[in-house]
Every structure is written in C-alpha cells, then in structure tokens.
Image (cartoon, rainbow, N blue to C red; front, side):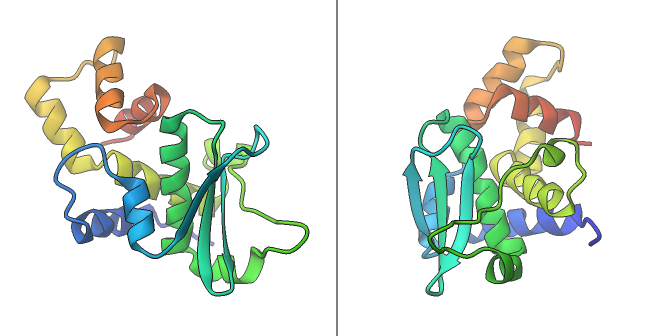
Length: 173
C-alpha cells in the first residue's frame, strides 16, 4: 500500500468544513457522535490507547479512560481516521468476538513505517491541529520552536500534548 498523506489531510479538512469548525479546540468527541459512531471510554491495558471496530453494522470507538485527556483526544481522532479512511479494513480485519482484535498504535507508527498508521496519524494531526489554524496563530503571535513556553501554550490551546504539537510544528512545512 502506498502512503497518501494528502488524502488524509484533505479528509480531515473536509471533516472540519462539514462540522463548521471555526476555533480550537476541535470537538472531536462531538464529531464522532454526530456520525452515529458509538463512543466509549473505559479503562484498558496501559499499552492500548484505543480501538475501532464494526459490530452489527455499527462503528464503535473505544478509548483508554486511564490515559490523559489530550492523549484520548488524539486517540479518538486516530480511530475516527480509520473509520473515514480505511473502513474496508475494519470490515475485513477487525471483529468482535470472545477474543477482541483491535488496531493498536504500534511502535512502527512512531517511526512512520506502517502505511495505515502514517495516514491515520496524519489525519489526526490535521484534524486536531489544522494547518490553517496553526499558521494563523503562529503568524499572529510569532513562534519560536525553541521557546518551550510558546509551544506549551499552543498545545494547551489545541488541547493536544506538547510532544504532538512539537511534532506537528516540525512537520508543518
């Protein structure tokens, strides 16, 4: 499979447009629920951030209630991306039975190896930290990527982790 980051970005931008998002933070949980996706936040094993699957024709997104709210937001956007970009995968590979198989955020996703993970992470980044909003905010306030306080302020505004914001800013161009 070929990675298509542009497709992921455009899909996220379309979601923002469809939901008339004009300011930050993006209400990702509200977007999920408005699409008739069942959303559940429950304690899971520490290494499992979230899951998405289809059961009886309904998409279900589950998040780890033990994780930080900013991490949950990114996980929610990540799982929504699977629903939007790779729903066919959910039909073929993910199913619920006595043993649940779930798409996990694998170590390879952090190293941009798994094409699906690259695309869904690109979608999640664009959805939660839209390029247009970031560029506008940075041009209004100025941005020094070496200024930790400034990056932390941006992360707080967008309700994402500092590491997610740092990565997004570094890859914005």
